[in-house]
Length: 316
Length: 268
Image (cartoon, rainbow over all chains, first blue to last red; front, side, top):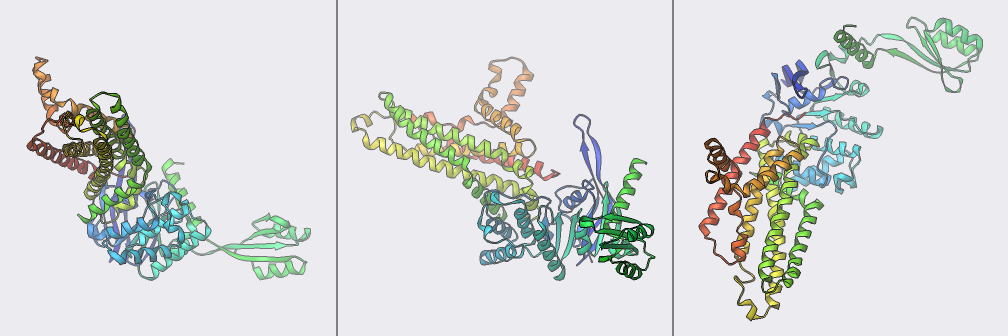
């Protein structure tokens, strides 16, 4: 069964003060996310990602179309106890501590007595909040609030979680931690629908992605379907290169860039034999630092598809 | 009901930790205490002055709390987006609005209870330090239980004001909501004049409009029985109960309207 389904979901906002006109923020979005899937909802800023999530949470009402979560129409009261939602740049009550906020939310989910304390403590451990859980939220940094946001989304052990920019405001350690939390959720069978414009996150976590631009879904599918994963070339980093060798590399490479400490980064075409190049360089006294195959990344695909959608819109 | 109670409890806890109501309660208590000194300056009228000032201080500072917290109750949550996470939980928008309202009314009631205790403490001190001969000319005893009735009606009036503030805050900015609420509070105290408009003007459409407004605007004058209580004039229990019943009905209508507006809102 599909965990999340949308059918021709559209949302118009009225813009302008004197003569309000409709502005289409989301245009006939149709997608389906299976149970247990990690779905990355990607797109540039203003593409309509948060609008979609708010429509799924019924914080916005659609202009047309429909959406279902776990087979029930959005807004269904019983379903809300089975899902979790992390809003973009979440904000909570200044005067409550993280523990108090989560106890409050836990009770709204129907938890009582010692169960509340147990669950709150476990979920705060999961997101890596330590002793600061007893501080009032007004004293929290942005990254800490983001962790509290994640904790409240996981409080009810949801079957489906909706995360709007979950890595936003986190330092590299925090991002790694959130990635681990998401992988644990996936392993226990939770469906994850997350929006992001950080493509490396999507690439490492998602089984499927959808790319949104100007309110329209311009691509959707498994990463293996979207990306060809063909070899596009080789990236070679080399040190101690003589003038003669440099001239030879310039002739064979697509581009040669000088790095720090005199090292060179060499972009080689895919049809070249890299072991032969390395041997030649070594014989001439150069030292090979690294050699990496270059394949199409999600970022390449994203730039191409969003760029194409942009140029269709502007007619250029 | 449990959900409404939880939302109300969170509002109460947050406002108890906010410094603004504390400052207002402290200021009101100070004013009540100061009324003792002012009373000393007025020969023979001291008890009346203390009671009048004390009750007025409660009403005014209660009004400030009701308006300034009431107008931000919903709008602050929407503006700061804390409403997003909350409404994704098993909480309906109606439960959210009613819970918010009850939380603030609870805060108001506790604040006024603190002020009332301070008020009675000043009156007790007066009672203990005044000669029996002077006490005999007071229109009502110092620790008159009718004062508590006046406070209960003040809480009821402030509950209406809170409902008005909440209603406006479901669709307008805090500043506009404050203006509308204070405007309605002022109009509410002169409401009886609208009913008898034909006595001052002969134009029928205007009279009808005034009569219509009389029924729509809150009628707050009956909630003010301060003058009667201070002067020891009896206020019939039936009048008090009727006024309280009016408050319940009026608040019910305002909350229903607030829920209807809030239910249809999009949170961008």
